[in-house]
Length: 348
Image (cartoon, rainbow, N blue to C red; front, side):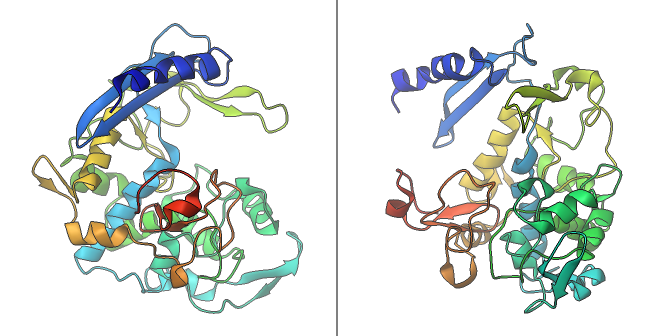
């Protein structure tokens, strides 16, 4: 790898993002063949602050929680505790009676029966018909906002059951939409194992991988390392504080009621690098076998119905790429046609 080009990364982000006030910091780690080729930390733990970030800084990793939860599901799959074709109602009976939005308004929706039952694989691939309230695409999103889906007062299983009583955006397997589906998978992990999701993660994934700074909250002896969190104001476009860092955090200073399997983890760059290395090495790292090579190979295939692409099944507004030549596997998107993506890359 070209060291000179890698060394230019911090300057680029400093000039274009930090100095312009778009973001407070940037952490970058690039590895090749398991060896770190570049690691840099620039900026501060809060906008306008003086405390620099570093390898010890703990970030909220939001949807990078999803691959962890999906991996947990596949660990149970390997143990014969579930099948991908199993209906979700096998584990959460409320999903046996779900309905699909067929018109009307959010206040008075018209409903119809789905073409078939929702499966575990539908949840994994975001083809279940669930949605996110923040997508702002249609009336089903509005219903999620009205019903406060994902509020932090609910347990994960309570949220999963709540969504079973709300209209699906489409019949399972007919479209692709980024959604709360991975949260439902997290609830299923809890139901099958009888363990809270944080306990399963620590015992089966984080402990063996020595991801010692990754969890759904930050303990008191580490809380001063928690980065502040910011968001864009939808109307003004300005960067605003979403949650303070350190002990002032309202969401991460203590164990949350909701162990959000779709977006609740906090971690460090180096911890998540260990997770990625484990996958890159076929499910093992430093003697800890998390999943078999064959299962990981299976996960990296396109599992969308009929080999379709994300674009072909209806690209979600939350997707930042065109999604041409990109399918969806078990844990994330997969490249199926490099030429169609319009950018260099590799299959899988």
